[in-house]
Image: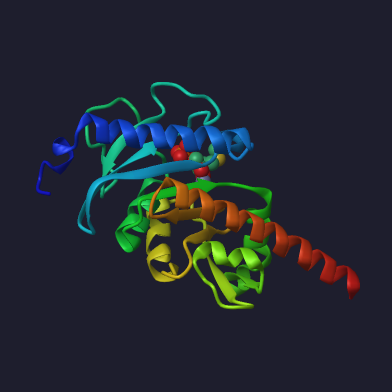
Length: 220
Ligand SMILES: CSC[C@@H](O)[C@@H](O)C(=O)COP(=O)(O)O
Ligand SMILES: [Zn+2]
């Protein structure tokens, strides 16, 4: 793909991306995962090269539990709108750009939950949430028995571009997700279905870790 790569996408390709995102947004919204307009979602379209790609992403500041014709827009690898629009891309678009650049994945989901916020703070000093031997680790395609994983945590700066190099440094190619401290999880996958699966697995594991830590504490 060259300079005008986005223009060579067919209407069907763009429509498919928008409808997949719309479906994922509605499903996650039905689970109450977009508290107070938080969260953002994206899906990549067309060919991928680390230096050039495009994706559809949620517009900034919207109530993500509502479905409107102004929910999504297309942006390029630098987070700039790929076509003329009055919509503003998610404030966290640059984090999506960096995750696509580093992983070549096909879709990304970001949500704020109490469990992901609490564990990101509880394990902040070690900069990772450790999980040992829980069956759902297999959702990340890690099949060892009693596997141990560390889910990376990066600082949550108000200035989003400052978070980008932290993601670059801490992203672990084995783990399809990264936590922002007291903010939320970014989970990704090769397509929307896999990103959703990974997000569900992370949230299960965060709740497990939270409850297990609590139980351990009550034994001391
Ligand atoms: C309203 S609090 C959440 C925001 O600050 C942000 O973290 C978020 O997830 C949503 O931002 P958005 O610009 O709508 O994509
Ligand atoms: Zn957020």
